[in-house]
Amino acid sequence: MISAEFFCAELDRRGFGFFSGVPCSYLKGPFALLEQRGSYVPAPNEGIALSMAAGAELGGAKAVVLAQNSGLGNLLDPLTSLTMAYEIPLLLFVSLRGWPTAEDDEPHHAAMGAGTIGVLEAVGVEHGILDPTEESLAGLLDRAEAARRARRSFVVLVPAKTVGTCQVPAGESAARMDRQEAVAAIAAHLDGALVYSTTGMISRELFGVRDSARHFYMQGSMGHAIGLGLGTALNRPDERVVVVDGDGAVVMHLGGLALVGERRPANLTHFVLDNGSYDSTGGQRTRDTALRWDELALAAGYRTAHICRTAKEVDAHLAEIAGRPGPHLVALEIGRGGATPPRVTSAHTNAEVRARFQAAAANDARKEES
Image 1 (cartoon, one colour):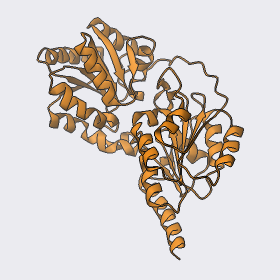
Image 2 (tube, one colour):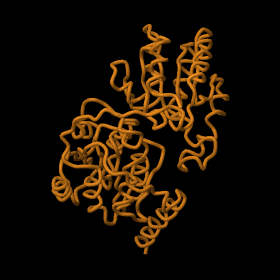
Image 3 (cartoon, helix red, strand yellow):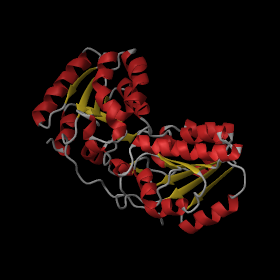
Image 4 (spheres, helix red, strand yellow):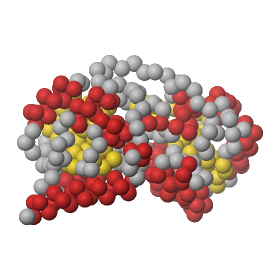
């Protein structure tokens, strides 16, 4: 296995001075080291990471993007229409989740695991698969340098157990709730609602605290829980719809908030759990400063918005807005980390989650019709 220290030192030796990306646990070690340096900028999504890296290159720096292959879709537009069109060469490290077989990972990685190499080949991006040796890294970086001289980008694909990990620096937090307390506080108010929970630990936490056929546990498709909730809320005004989101997921596709504020469904409540980190990939930071979620949501057009710091505040605020038309945004400040909750797939396949959710929603619709 390649140590995280050697990985970063080799990039330093070759003159790379700007780093951006969206975390993956396969690259947890390099992210932990890079976060301690001023040369790394965490990006809200992979496309922004790539465009920032391109800007750094245009400004004279050698730039690196690190990402998970599930975010390859976010990369493709700027990769093809910006860096390829303008011949801006970049070095990318992209994890190979769900590879070489779908059984090697969670189900939501299956399609991209099988398709990552084909996608890169289809758009004509040179790439190579990293073996867990220092010699392999050196060889691929040599190939990347040759591609750079030809004004082309190069992608290093990183399988599981290829690059070592190291401790993520613990950040200070004044939060008074942990993730489980926050989810439990929300769960106490979900009776009768159709609920969408975001990918990662939040869906797993909700499943562990309170499983229900009316819960759609979204795995993968980070940042799109609010799209699911909005689509249902607009088409089922007879239902109370709840989205339980995370700060990193919301920021990834912040336009979702603007669309909620523009359409203003009265039956939608949007919870955002904010710990400033990506807990499911190793606790890497989403940003250094907290967002003012209440001001942001109100500016976008939500009817109410509030920040809660304790479970009691959650209870009190939800009692205050009960029966009032939304959309409502309720942000919960929580601490990083916590116990690891069970995976939803330990009990239900993704198809089962979808089928029972649709059945529960359809049954209520039939009751309304009768």
